[in-house]
Length: 437
Image (tube, rainbow, N blue to C red; front, top):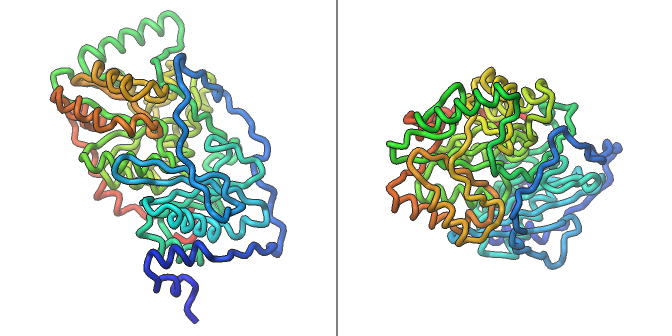
């Protein structure tokens, strides 16, 4: 007898969406009690508390979508566009008795969301335990799913037990650091570069920083800028990846054939591995932005080393490529931080141009800051989940063209060709921690 997935595959995408959306998903009591939801009490990591930059304004509200009739497990559905496509992000909260049906509930939510708003190209689903839920920066999801409209049949087959490479499940995936609380501080504003050391160390760091800026290129494992005589600037995005925002940003970069360097938070990469693979497939670089996005000077040195090492392991496991670049959250670092990065083969990358997109200054202000600070040899700091960056990205490119500056990766800034990660990527097997892969 054909499986449910095979039957659903006979329908057109529209009918498939309707059938999934109208499906009545049972939630039987599992035969054995499920373990208690992890992280019911969120603990703080050293270095987690992040100051908010002066002048930061509240971001404009993201539009929300309501399902009719409502789906009890859906906490929120938001959607955004980039002028070309729209993408939605849905959060589901499950009770212990519903966890066994997480795949079917996620697939149903995806189908109903796409049915409710025909203009959506994709919906990203994040499923959490209701107990202990702490938002995007709290305990990790138990399941994530990227559901482009064109792949609803694949999502239906996955919900029936099949494989799907754009899904991740915590079940069967051992955390890289089981003793860690897996709680992240996602509010770092990289507004300044801050060195913490004694007088002699501070003088030595200032000398290295000046030499790097004058000469351009890497000096003693640090990069503050490139050669000002070359008409290129590095385009970098911190804090990646985020659901909903990542497909929108990658779509803009693809349309304009721009390559960038993404400084990735390890735990984000773990929960949304398909977005990291998307970056690599499109020719972008991925760098290390620590595992939990904590400010490193407050951590003991072994903990700081672990933050960098876990992220390297996570990214290499997804891309098959060694990680070359590191950016400290908040721009905060010590001599020990730099030593740890060097020991792991990482170049510490700072920036010359910070339009402060995370401060939500307004489109006009953001454009003027970008125009005023953009220059050859520069390193531009943006964030992958800033609404205003999506809105003014076209203007950014126009300013760069007007000045004759080509936007590229950090490797491109340094004059080397970006690693041929596209060909190498296809030789890497899919993350074995994902059930069904």
